Image 1 (cartoon, rainbow, N blue to C red):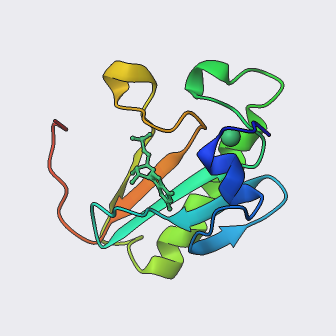
Image 2: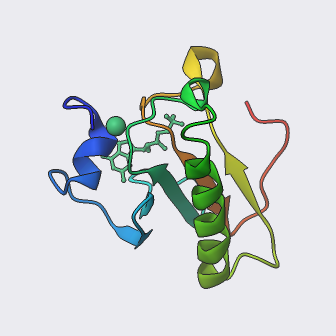
Image 3: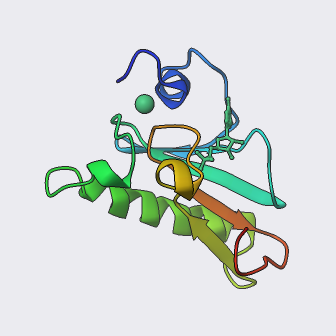
Length: 115
Ligand code: 5GP
Ligand code: ZN
């Protein structure tokens, strides 16, 4: 938990969010500014600032997030049509919220390469 972290505030219910799924380790909620019909953020409940802070002691969070993302892709009906997972890291990566999050994007044809 980090006092000044937006996503920790969502975890703690201080800031409301449209929650899609959660368990002891991970939380999923809809992005406030969706870039596709399905745009869901999956985050660890522990405050991990970015992929740079993943290590042997907390890497299990990422597999829990991945399993949750697959379950949500099924429930959103985008598993067969396809989707994209995105994790932005640091300034050049376009990370604006410094609590690790996996974007699950789908429901339209996504372009490549990203901007
Ligand atoms: P990043 O650019 O760090 O990879 O992604 C941060 C994401 O968090 C953005 O897609 C942004 O729309 C989303 N976001 C920022 N503030 C809030 C918020 O208060 N609630 C929700 N649900 N999403 C947010
Ligand atoms: Zn946090």
